[in-house]
Image 1: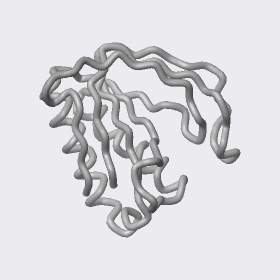
Image 2: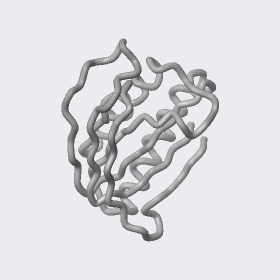
Image 3: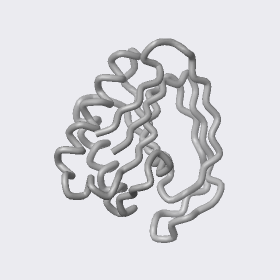
Length: 136
């Protein structure tokens, strides 16, 4: 898994092009303020280690959220951080499980529309730990 976490004062997205027909149709975007935005790339080998990967993902999200003083997280599929890719179905299930675990820990969690190219707009301040990359 590759995980790029960016603290954003403001994160906006809007669906542009649907690329995975088997996922839900979405027409509306959203604006989220003061959130940790997680650009997540699940890799093929993650499918064999699903429980371990989920645990590390949630641990990293909680750690980075705490370092940035937020309880709001955005999960965004960003399959551009590695050449290896997990199946879309595995990735979406991983997102859903991570969201559930984070919500059970009192985090507010949103997912960007899965299976879409999105228009993105982000206000991300430049300070230590506002941008963190993890590979596991």
